[in-house]
Length: 475
Ligand code: NAP
Image (cartoon, rainbow, N blue to C red):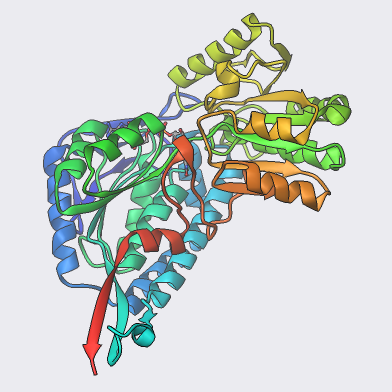
């Protein structure tokens, strides 16, 4: 068993709870037992919703909420290495990337603390109409109510932070269900919250069968919002099943990048190699489709492929590793199948496409038709296609040619082209001269089309988790 995480209980109503049943967590790299967590079911989830309701009966003032959030940010800094190793052990995320995630969670909590302190409504200009003359009106932002949160395996700490921290900033109590494969980072964060003197019931963590816990969150009317990050199939079904709740979805992408011939190809190749394959492509904004102007295509490929080959594939707990395992063998077999489908259809595997030990090597595919799954669906593996184009319009059309719309990027020195792309790319975010894998935690982050219906980033999430109450005064 790893030293960082052994046996954890659930956090419900401020108590660490055992249930007599356990969820085992194994390293995606070695298969060794990382630890086990008490298994929650419907009863524990209902109990957690009760606790959230009770907690909100005694609202915490904004300054207290902000102080707690700041304390947690501090603790994340002090326990940085432990936090990073917990992420690496359970998610198989290379330590390099796990350290970045641990640092980003500090930033998420820090920004949430700022939002708690500035949560305010607005004045309504009442004398702007005859009806309003002689009255004063303003809005206050009220917490929406209990929040149900469901998070994925791939950022087991920072995406949990993006649920918990804005909920508290908004004054909402939360019931969190982390991914069953990666509950330890979430429980460590919950521990830091209790150490920061968060009163009981404000954060509850239940780990267990997704549908059983999900059903309670969908059906219980006291859960006013569900905030979900994960796959589209699950997310959109939750939204359909809970039409009267706010169901906020952060889903997948098949991330495209356009490379114009005036770009600095060495710089682009370096950035894209790191952002296509780091954490084996298991980020929702991993670079997956690179469209390069035909005048730059050969040179780009000759720079990009060696950089992909130079990445270190191996043990995520080794500080040198860039590319580790996929989360489980099912995911690995699926990605290999998609690569084989592309090969069989005449695509050219420029590098990778095979295992190194048990791990998939970074794989670059040329001549992949747009309807292949590596081109049109989210691979969520260390696979990237490269395609030549003639005109920027054609590149934009190709980039827009999937059902996803989370982030996209363009590399060019031509400001007009950059703006044209930013306008025409149908995505929640467009990066210029930066890989679209880039995210700073205060950004409004989220997708259009099948990629979701919300924006995260503490300022935006707090807006989603509060509602405006109008107050009108007769003067
Ligand atoms: P997933 O299979 O959809 O799981 C996400 C969460 O949903 C897990 O906690 C899972 O629980 C839970 N879940 C599964 N079935 C459920 C159900 N019927 N009811 C309620 N909850 C249910 O996704 P994943 O494989 O962990 O994550 C990868 C996906 O997340 C990718 O598509 C990626 O692009 C997306 N993602 C999006 C963003 C973003 O911000 N847009 C960020 C990161 C990841 P169990 O673990 O217990 O099954």
